[in-house]
Image (cartoon, rainbow, N blue to C red; front, side, top):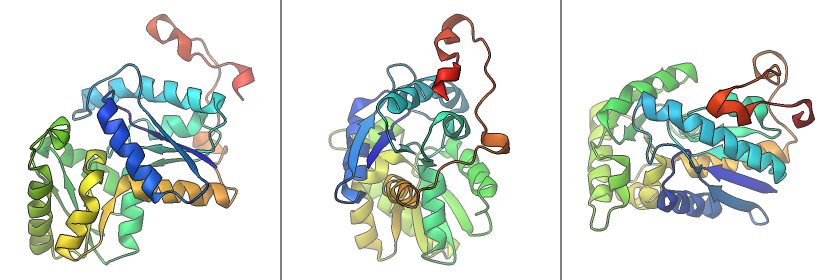
Length: 248
């Protein structure tokens, strides 16, 4: 099985960390490649960033299709471009926010999300409601650390994240923590051990769910909304995204 983890931002060091987390979670015999687009934002922390990350993400899906990839992990907690990726990928595409919330509901009655910047809380709320988990989500909290600062040398991001997770458990009365950024994957196990509750990294969760879907012979339904996009011309800077019958 060949699984591709796509970091929708252009920061290669974060892509490497995502690759480590996916590979650690993957089954023996699964090939994992982690990639990021050549174009787009260095990190995704706004609706503007998210919108401009999607073309690069879709370009990576196209490359994956050419490489006969079996399934994809979309490694950004905002799950940007997830619907579009599902329309054009042959195999399943699993977003890390959706995967993490699914697993959290299997491990406790309620979960809390701990993310990076306060401005991303609204997006996490929106996704929890869309995915049907709003009733199980007791709260969403921000550490107030920019995404790229998570991996700075000497950063206290792990300690700050653990402290915010502890506050979330106390404030919300929740049973499980969901980490709201792919860049937090490196210290998920440490935080879980320190707090004594399940702490879910969405990259690991999405990796296992994607593997399971492939093993079960399941992929995105082509009926209705996720049918292949109608063929049409794209112009200007997006001309290369025009689809052809051969793609289907």
